Length: 398
Image (tube, rainbow, N blue to C red; front, side, top):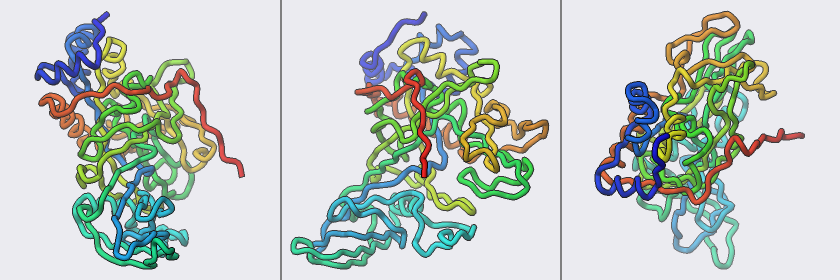
C-alpha cells in the first residue's frame, strides 16, 4: 500500500511549490502507466470539475438602507420576485424564479425564459439590474416604496448560496411515450428519440469521492469562478453505491452539496442563466473540488474512468414520478459520450446538458491555483453522510 499523507503535509508541499497536482483525467493516465500504488505515492492532489444547470441555486443580497429607511417586504429584481422575509434589506433570489406575469405560469411552453438565474448572471457581469421594493411601513422603517437601478458593486453583500449542487450522478433521461415532453433534462423526444445526461463522468467531483472520504463541511472549492466552500450536505443528499442485477458496482449515486461563496469574486463565465423550453429558468454553475490523495483507496476512486462509471437510464415519460432509478438499465459514461446508447434494443442518440470542455477547464484552473500556491486545501470540520449511513428519501404525501 502507498504511504499515508495528511492535509498538513500536502499543504506544506503546496506552499513550497513541490506538490504534485493532476486533474482526474491525468490521474487515470498515470495509473494506467505506472499502476495505482505508485501513482498514489506520487500524486498529492487530484482536481475535478463540473459545469451544468443546477436548479437549487440562488444568492443572498443585502441592498443597504435607503433614506428614509425601509423594511423591504416584497422585492423584485428585473421583475423577478425575490424572497424578502429575512430582514430589512436582505433578500434571496432563487435561480428558477420567473416573473409573475411569465406565460409559464399559465402552462404555456413558451420560448426563452428570463428568471432568477439570469438576474444572478447579470449581477456578476456588472450589468445594471432594476430593483423594486414595497413595504407596509413602520415607525423605524417608514418608507413604503423604492424603485432604482443597482449593480453588484452598489450593494453591501452578495453571497451565492446553493442548497443542492454538484449532484453526484444524474439520470440519463429518455422518453418512451408517443408525445414530446419538456423537462429539466431538456426536451425529450417521443419513442426514444434522444437521451440526455448531465454529469461530467470521470471529472465529476462526487463520483471521484463516492464515499465522502475527503469532501465535507469547510472543504474549499472552485465555485462560480471564485473560491467557495462546502457549507453542509445538499438537500436530497441520499448517497448510495449503485449496483446492477448481478451485484456489480457501477459507481455512486445520490450525493449533493450545499455550497457558499462571495458572489463579488465570481464570473459570468461560470454562473450562467439558462432557459429550458417548457420548463423554465435555472442557473448553470461551475464547481471544482480538490481531492487530497491521502492514501491508495482515495486514489483508486479518483482514478475511475468513464468506462467504469455508469448512469441510470430513466424513462421520464412514464416511470420517473415513481422514482425508479435505472428502470431501463445502466450505461457507462464512455457509452454516453460516444454519442449513442442502446435502450430496449434501440439505438438512441445522446447529448449532454453539462459541458465536458468547461469541466476540463475548471479542473485545469484549480490545478493551476494549487500548483502556484494560491489555493490551499482545507480539512473538513465534519465529513458528510456517506453511502454507509444508509440514508433514504421520504415521499411527500398529500
